[in-house]
Image 1 (cartoon, one colour):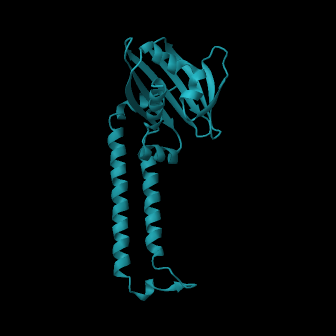
Image 2 (cartoon, helix red, strand yellow):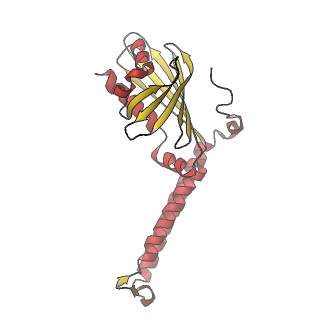
Image 3 (cartoon, rainbow, N blue to C red):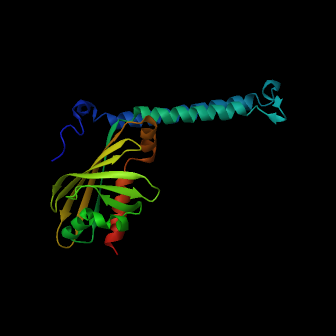
Length: 226
């Protein structure tokens, strides 16, 4: 059973429907701000191109273009921070994929921790830290650690993991739901992510918060097809 209070979403229910609209609006505002600032700098740069006040040199180097590039950098920085500020702390995403294997085989793939270093490209080794096999650490090839814990399990049907990245201060809850028969199966992965750091929220909002589960489904597909 999931731990009480792990994701307290009561406060966010009333605004859940407006968050995608808010994030999209912030991205739109940031993009328009960047476009406006870029055009403004281009206009000023063109208008004052031949003015002596913008054509002076410092140690033989023209600094006229400095105003243009500084403006672009400021606009990019402001836009990046704005996206993270508007992005919600708690985010969710969901993807599904069909596999040419039985539901039983697919369940074995996603629950056999010993197979993870072979199945997941980013996992170098796994260390079990709980005797009953419900908690372990995944070490990546670059040395980062991810703590995984089973908080709910229905054999052959559903698996819920709590995923913690202590370095980035990210908490995730990933829900695996299986459908199918003895010939074909479908795996649905729904992920709830809590990101406290502003800049990290900006990165996830721009790159897309489905990258993690998309990569896992791809790795699983490649392993099943072997």
